[in-house]
Image 1 (cartoon, one colour):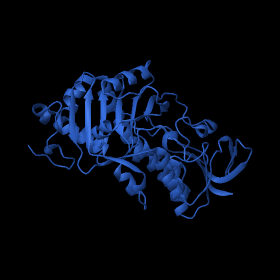
Image 2 (cartoon, rainbow, N blue to C red):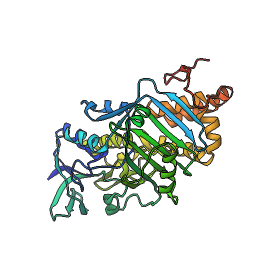
Image 3 (tube, helix red, strand yellow):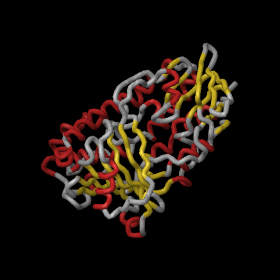
Image 4 (spheres, rainbow, N blue to C red):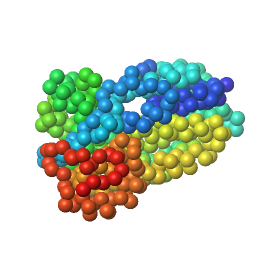
Length: 386
């Protein structure tokens, strides 16, 4: 009999396991893959996420991002510095496992859950091997296609985005070009973007669309990367769904909670979910410790979901009007400053919306030059110099 069973060893499940283990609870983590398991992901993590934990993440940081390039589909480009390198790049197999290794929990990998039942006293699960386990609570952190969610009748909506990600071997010239630089290619595909993120010895490139699938994603990825001098042919291409947060919905049923991608906690504008997975894992652990599962959904909605709904408004505005968004948003030094602060985990979508009308007006006559770096006046720090 465990205090809690956690299904899934990604950032949400590993974080929940860490905090419950720190509280002295008996925890079992069930992971369907063999650990450490590869996870296709851009791997950008705002550095404040590392500060959530009392241990060092430097062993799993591949690169630190100090510059961002925003390139429109016609080749126009804005380049800006990111003071203090606020975003780190990680490989998800190493990052997720790093958190899990610090958790005081029993871990069984290669153990997919195939059945689940609950009663007033606890939850019982059965794995593919025929073993059964029982706990007072269960946290479903098993990703975008969460089996736990299906088994308990949660998250019935089907709308998801889609991405294709490729780890591309890179020569020395490309590694130097992207050493500390993240590139965002905007204006294609519809309702999404392409990216190039640097890792220690290769480039992570991909394409994502966040409001449904589109045809020819692989062809678009190959064509646009070739224009940048990056060849993706021959490298494994891995696709996966993106469970974008578009509405509030229940994340608890009986003694079962959902966290991370299983709870659809993915940013509607950026497609980023690691930060919210970590935070939802902590909230799930706190709900278990307080024996307040009904309050879990409310806390997630208040602390994460409410701002993601603001993000969905930004996303629809940006992706429905890509040309205007590039000219009036990306090239506006005040708006792009706030976006970079968002990327670094230093502001919220709601605060951006409050500032946006004034930032738009003040920045109209100060559009950033194309293919040149942004001046120091666009620092991520609060305040504005003329």
